[in-house]
Length: 119
Image (cartoon, rainbow, N blue to C red; front, side):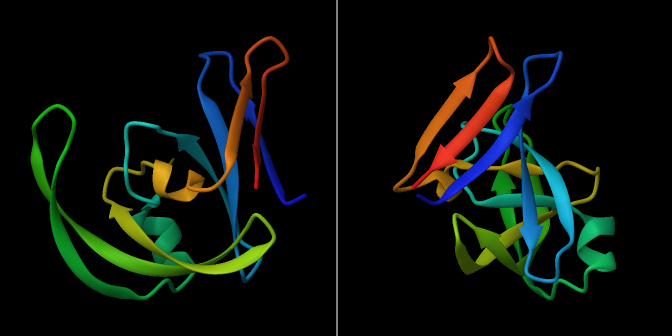
């Protein structure tokens, strides 16, 4: 069974590590309020030569409107190699959104501080 695992930190935030096809990894906060796939920091995008293919304007949950570069990252996810649209964060945020959870099961165990996503 395809599976990704992560952890819950002391602030009760759930994190999953994403892995690019080149082997680079980054810890991302699981954000079920974000309907996109991934948000990665600009420095990580640049360091890993993730191509920028355009930009889009978004409205954040608090109502702020912003424009972000869009990249395409090649990642390993649930035993598949995928091309994923990535919003590039200027402030260093790294998020996994619900688009990454489609057709999967998310389990967050706060008692044991573990996160598991299975397909």
